[in-house]
Image (cartoon, rainbow, N blue to C red; front, side, top):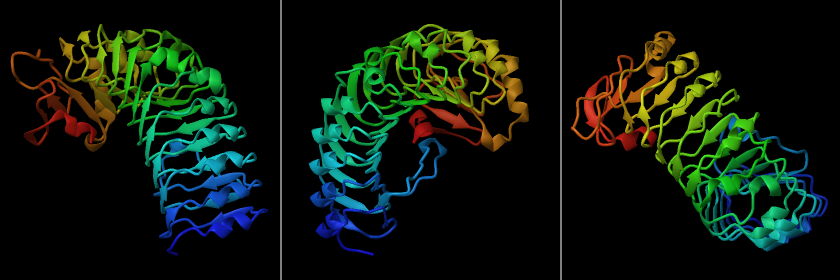
Length: 352
């Protein structure tokens, strides 16, 4: 199906289900959408994703425009949808700002607007969405700071994704002391400050990505005994040593600590992480050798399915050589990396 979404859709006052996904619809979202006051789920999600971290559960009453190219601004009339619990506007071509009226939809449990062209600051009114469990504003051009604590405003929030925006602010003030988080994804913004020690209390946390911000200070040694599957603190300004307590994160698959100012040696306790398929520690000031306990982990991995990256290339004198017999990618700081096939590529290519 092609063409635009008709204004007359607002006449379907008792609408329970309308599935229009994977078509060629375009144009703007009509303001008459605000007439659908019985709507529980509005899904305008763009290209289909299958990532398990999305945790998508569709309600029986749904309006879906999945896989289209909806343009224009988000209608303020969406705030009139008092019954709506699921609102997904992701991966379309929406522009402008997030309307303040969004805060009126106080039964919202899921708000997704990833992968659009949205700009400006997030309105204060979003703090009224006290039932929100899932917030995804990633891959936009939002800026400014959140003038409130996320954990205080959203006490049951478990999934927070703000990656690839231009948000600023102190990370500790922004996140608060919430204990319901399972995923916190804040990479590629301009958050600053230190990593809160309160992360040790987030006993449900399975994914934490603070990469490519302006965080400073040390890695807290109480981020241990958590069900973390991946931990990325890469590309910040962190100092100090790698805490040996990270070896208690028994379920960890990915540990990215590269491009910081970490020093000292790699703790042998990381050898306790029997599922650690990805370890990235290059572009730091680490010394010594990769512990045998860590290298022994790779003996059970298929070559194509693990990546251990460190500063183990013969290199310029400004970066200290780190010995790693099991690394399958060696770098000389941030300038050059080489895999088993030789040659040289920029370290930034590891994350593209």
